[in-house]
Image (tube, rainbow, N blue to C red):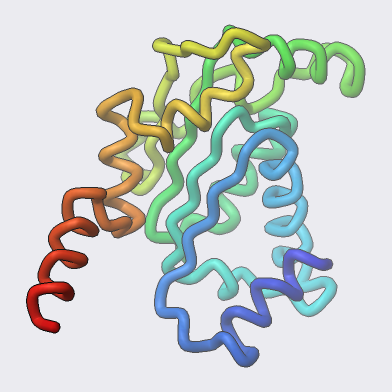
Length: 179
């Protein structure tokens, strides 16, 4: 219920001035997201799927059961702007998680999204991350995606309307010259 409370606070509380909510989840954060969507489906803990209205959802290395994760996409699909799913079968942390915790049930971050290229779900994008430079478990590739190591990061940044560094410098220079 805490994530529902947080979303309610942003949507209806003192921070209601936000027009756009973007949710970026890594690893177990995806589990929290899918559980929250499940609670909203059941209308529990003050949750409603409307909390996700217009959200861009970006999931990386999803440590959530594959079937549960894909059900969450369908449950919230009519509310969201888009859902981007980054995955790799090289993620050792997810291999360990699937073996220890769920008796060899695949984690969503180990395979492409069930709705990849499905014409009924055009707002879902499933991206296999193959260019990992992570030296540990191949689990931290979110840093590479958001750190602009790959052109896919530009797509994420564009979807989130994040100003580029060049734009920031131009704005700073314009601000200084107007003083």
